[in-house]
Amino acid sequence: MENFLRGHVGAFNTWCGLPRVLLYDNLKSAVLERQGDAIRFHPTLLAFAGFYRFEPRPVAVARGNEKGRVERAIRHIREAFFIARKFTDLDDLNAQAEQWCRNQAADRPCPEDRTITVRQAFAQEQPLLLPLPANPYPVEEQVAARVGKTPYVRFDLNDYSVPHAHVRRTLSVRADLGLVRVFDGTKMIASHRRSYDRDQQIEDPQHLKALVAIKREARQHRGLNSLARAVPACQTLMIRAAERGANIGAITTAMLKLLDLYGAQELQAAVEQALHAGASHSRSVRDVLERRRVARGAPPPVETSLPEHVRRKDTTVRPHRLDSYDQLTHGGKDDE
Image (cartoon, rainbow, N blue to C red):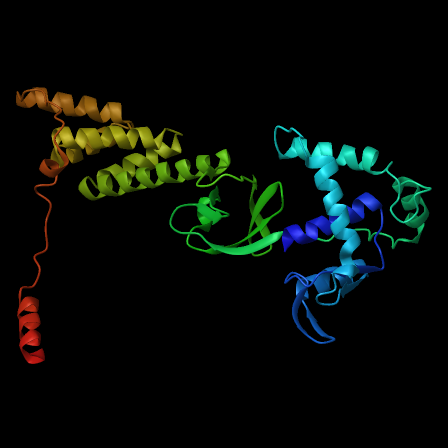
């Protein structure tokens, strides 16, 4: 339907006006149902006709003579334009078609009056056309699309990125020949060039940049939480570091490494000692840890990289209640 109406708009703009009556064959885009002279038009076409103020009029069923001139014109285009024509892409073909229409097709003899050309006939009829409205009719495809847990909306076999804050929502997609726009209510949240391929991901770099930033912030937040649970004194250390404008992410990463090397108890004591001395950086905490290690005569800690299943071997696992299996067994016997 959108392409059907785009053809109308293109013709109206080329003519700088439009006829008062447009004839239609009984295609479903124009006529939904017909019983004799009773006709039910497609509501979208009626809205379009009301906007441009023309009368849509379907031809009679099985009356080829009412649209014979149109069929003859299609044959003329096939024979005079398309045969043996070469083009590189659709844009090239459209450019050639426009040039052909404005030159060879316009200078051919008019079928109804062979003494004048089509160009001269159109010059006589153009003043009789209805004027175009000030604003063109918005011919766009509009669909509702559900966004899952990834920030992409699916449209026409391709995925278009949206801001990460709009995941798990139903958004509105509006598309014309060149652009795909995504709306959340009345607010436009994304705009992309339209792709006519399939299974492509069309992304806005700003959407990806914001997503990376929020993920990095989430990782930092999880690191701070685990650090604060293991070493409560680190909360005060981070507050003081933030007050002096330090990089909280870098300090968090360094403190988590110290936690793995020295343990929570030793790191807690070192942080308290560093805070008492007025220091609020991971380097100061590391110096305190090294002095305490030397004073104890302990060997330097060695950083080891262990597989995930080994590092998680001491994770507390809550056992499942076994009586639930007995309930399943009893239920099976009752069903039998």
